[in-house]
Amino acid sequence: MSVRIETIGSAILYQADALDVLPLLRERSFVGLITDPPYSSGGAFKGDRSAPTSSKYQSSENRGIYPEFQGDTRDQHSYLAWLTLWLSRARCLVVPGALGCVFTDWRQLPTTTDALQAAGWVWRGIVPWDKTERGRPQQGRYRAQAEYIVWGTDGARPLQGPTAPGVLRLPVPRQKHHIAGKPVALMEGLMIPMDTGPILDPFMGSGTVGLACQAQGRPYVGIEVDATYFEIACRRLQEGLNGASSGAAAG
Image (cartoon, rainbow, N blue to C red; front, side):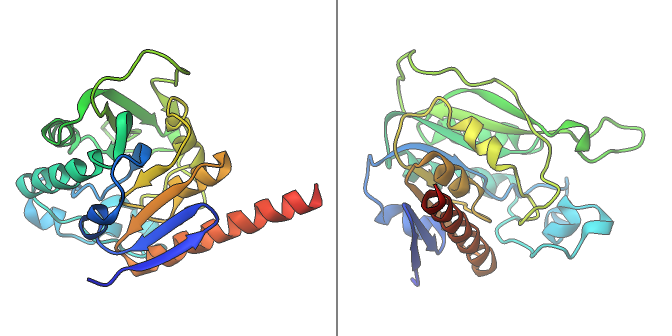
């Protein structure tokens, strides 16, 4: 197993398969899980799911702008098994009562809620991400305007601390770094009810959760199997760190 590790400020980034890295991390050391795994969605049939990610998740005029990403071709059964496997390992890494947040789309929403529970998390609800009217229009149909965050806790969690919105309404960024890129502010919104401490992200992509942690002064551990996106995440976090350092020096 080859694992590349980069440390950028209080962030530790691993380039490797999440299932290889998660067993190496210290148990009960994270206050929360926020991650955006590949959905293995975009179609009802095997041929649809096996299509390039750019054709599944982008309109034709935007194809080729961003690199493709891996791990998006599982069928329903293998996707459930895979989700359950890494969610089980991730649950061992968070403190008791910690929050876990997993992104999904409408096709994989039932499978994701099943996997969260099969992995031992207590399923608590669903937070819709309303992408606003910037979401992809479909003539003669409803606009594809929402994705979903399935969330739960590792066991009981006391009713105390701040309350976060039950729906997060933020547009898709006009300038993205990933085919499935999401706003940094969306990740910060998910952190509102989480305790102070490090966040785990087994599917880092372009590092958006890491940037949200950086903005909040939280330690972060991100894992990404794809070398291209790993480099993008490293660059974004380094630029964010340099910007913060420059601002502190100027102040």
